[in-house]
Image 1 (spheres, rainbow, N blue to C red):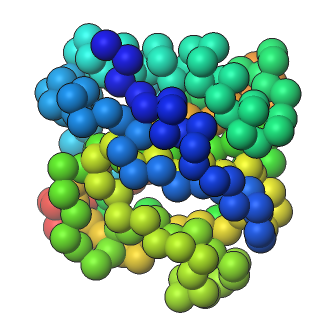
Image 2 (cartoon, rainbow, N blue to C red):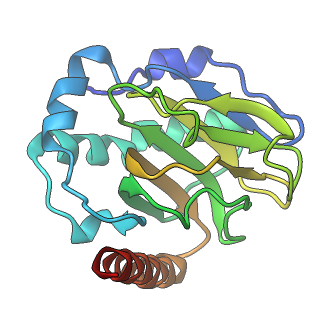
Length: 211
């Protein structure tokens, strides 16, 4: 079963100001959600983890295969008007949000397009909702706010003003992040960076629990 609704993606408008982005609730088809939830990797600590280092079931594996497949690439090439031929992909996953998460940033210059796919059955908290922003320093200068509910897609072209972040939240928060990046070396460096960041966050959490 194809878990992603490419027809809905094709009909979704790309907003170009102040940077190219789109938002699509329900990019993961409703009939695929239960299986993906069941097979989502168990992640007990905050931080982004390369999917190569996680254990997960077949439905999640199938979703990853579609995300990195030719139909996904072709859809994004057409929507964003960009050639992604030969551009490597990198996927990380999150399971929890911590105190160090949500700070305003633009993503590394080696990332071409960022795709965020949320997998939380519901969202009632005030914090943790992604905000696309006009400002590098004001979390209230909001273009749009997106609750991270299951199946929702946020995608944007990385630029010097593609500011985003979210208000503080601590707890379970599932998100899959796909990036097309400039070169294969970037994938290795980013995986090492995510490993180091996740380790630091895990150590900080362990220290707080033992204090």
